[in-house]
Every structure is written in structure tokens, then in C-alpha cells.
Image (cartoon, rainbow, N blue to C red):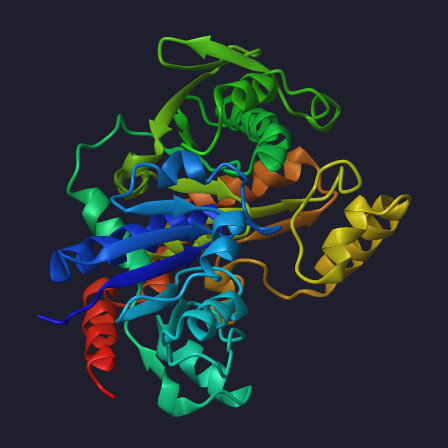
Length: 396
């Protein structure tokens, strides 16, 4: 057994905390039962800000945020240890490794993430590795291990199934976006139900959403002029103001719900890859009707214009122009080089979403999308990642 004193895990966003950290931590705990595990939530503009609500459930010896991370840099490492980044800025993993004298590793699903200070970067698919090498990364330090999302998906399918639903709603786990998107998606469900009576909709509720945030979103303030609708709790679900009942699925049952559903509505992010691996046809939304009122996370300096006096209008203009130039927002579309998942972006009308959804519900389109998504066939990656991590740590 490898004599490892401690493993320091770093992560940032809600998707990574939900799908990457649990399967890897589970395998590491099994292989290194005597080791100490610390998890640091390094929140950035892509974080929900409430990740700690979920992280508290994980079996770690210490849980901290950015403040605790900085304090940890001042303490010398144990005799043997390692840093593993599971979502976030790779420079943070390299910094901690250098300060503590530990090798730094990371996992990524992007062909753009690379830092020369890493011992090894693990990726999910060959396409990610090829893209990294094309951008100048050292091929000797990139290893394909498989999809951690696939591990989470398979583990969830072994649990109890929720009540069936035809359409699943994923209106973000970030509170500032959720308040805007829930009422908007519920409005789409009302219109879809009018066109197709009998369609069952369900909201997949993230555990990162506090009750007060949900209560605010149910009022649908600010989105009614866009076609959004308010709702209220009734019999464990939601009743919209138009009278449509919406089921509520616990986040832990989301993959089982995906296996039964016919369609999902979501925004760009890690969960588009989750939906693709579940082979569920999906409409991906980037509504920008209120881009100067709703904080949409962005990479780079443009994001921080939100906090500059008078910067919100400029930020909104830059965001809208930038989104127009991006060929594909959804990760599956980027991987496949085609708009397999329809994307609606900008200031689109709710009726456009309804029409695209109805088209995607047609049996022929359903089969076409599901067949195309089979090309995303990454195997589970947690066992392979842990095997390679421990093997590399035993190698001088």
C-alpha cells in the first residue's frame, strides 16, 4: 500500500463538485484508508457560491474555501502528499504543490486547460488530448483516463427512480441565474402542454439552492414580460399560475430521470455533457434579455466589468456580440463539431423555444440525436484516474 500522508483536492464549480469529486474521492478513500483528505472550494465567477452546502456531505477530513487555501500554503507539507485539481484554475494546484513540495495533478474535459507546472493532466477523451498537444502541451504529461461524469451517471442509475417525466428542466444551480430562468422555463412548459396535452414536466432541483432563493424564483419577478410564469408549492411539486403541475426531482436522482425523459431544457455548462452521455435530446439556452441585470459568468476581464461603475452596459454589449461569434455553446456540440443540441441564444422569444422543443420531441429527431450522441462514448474514468495517480506517485 502506498504510504501517502495526505491528498489535497481542489475544485470550484457546482458541476465539478457534483460529478468529478465524489467518484474520485470514493476510490481514493478505498485505496488510501489511512490518508488524510482535504477539500478546498476555490470559488470563482463560475461558482454558485453555495457549494459548501453539498461539500459538507463528502467524507473529507478538512473542508475549506479560498481563505483556508491561502492559510494552508503557509504550512509545510507532510512527508508524502499530492495535490489534485478537479475543476478550477490549474495555477492554484501548481501553486499549492510548489509551496508544499507536493506534485500537482489535474483533471480536465477541455482542450484548452494546460499548465507546465503540472506533473500530469488527466483528460476524458483523445480529442481533449489532441487539442492540448496542438496548443503546445507536453504529450508525455497528458493521459486519457475516461469520463468522471460517466462514473456519476452509472452510480446514480443504481438508485431508486423518480416519478417519470417527459421534459426535465435544469434552470441552473447558480442562484443569480436560477431566479431568472425557472419562471422562463415554466412558461415554456405551459405553452408546450397547450400544444401537447399530457406532456409531463419536472424541475431537477439542485441542492445548492437555498429555500429563500427558490421562494424568490417562484415569484418570477422580472421575467413575466418575457413569457415567464410564477408558481407555488403543491403536493411536493409546483403549480404554475396557469394551472400546470410540475414535478420536482431531487438532484441525486437526475440521471435516473434522464433515462426516462424525452427532452431537457438547460443552459451551457458541464451538465450538457451529462445529458449527452445519458443520450437525452436537449435544447440549450443562453437567454440574454437581461444581460445587464443578471450576472452571467464569463472568462477573463470582461466578467469583472459587472463590478465597475457604469460597466454593466458595456459588459452586456460585449457579451451579446461575443455569443454571436461562438459557433457552439454546448460541450457536446463542440465535441461533435455540429449543432446536435439546438441552441437558442440572445433575445429569442419563448415561442421559438416551444417550437424547437416540439421539433426535438418528434420520434425521428429523437432517434437521430440519440444515435449521434453515441459517438461520445468515453468509458468511466475514476478507477483509471486513481490507478494512474497512485502509480505516478510511486514513480520517482
